[in-house]
Length: 273
Image (cartoon, rainbow, N blue to C red; front, side, top):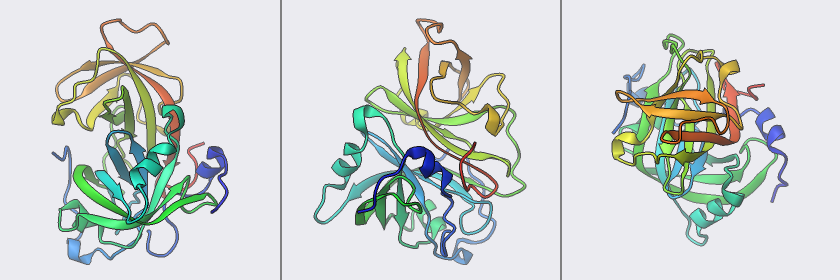
């Protein structure tokens, strides 16, 4: 078993799968080429979540990795309780960086339902770094394609900082940055929910969260300790940054508790800072 290294060092290692082979839906665009033309590849993913576990595909701006995609998944193994092993690493409810290295598969087949799962190795930290291998030959079953968005170098920029909000029953939530223009970034945060509770209908899963008055730029991304006050608009969460303790008592509030993964485009390699 490999030794665990600090998360700062983990993030300094490329997460965009540089070795050979790496390489209701809310918004989607057609793939640049037919699915049959996309080769099988190793599609690295970041795992997060509690009552439901999600896998976030680590993208690039070229085939076969040219999709931002978020999947609800189930973990299993012939001899090990894979979900319990994963949950044991969420010490005191704080989400660490946990990744999977799948065996090669064709990503468009997973996105359109022709493929419903794959085998993968589970790592604490970056699967390409010198970190702790937790489990090999783990089965990852996709129960829902939560979000998919085709990416290219012509993908339009967003006017404001935007995340996808994923709520959990334990009063936490995850924020997954919505990737757009090629100089964008892949970013996932954990937050604690306060004030009014988040709605839990299927329409609220991965609903966009737009941070009012904050430009869409890596330097403006959300960070550990920041607090957001939310209001529900037309299909989106409108959010504004507020000082800790200054939010309206009737509002839904998110406080960032773990800033555990960030890597910049266009290559999605290395740390954001």
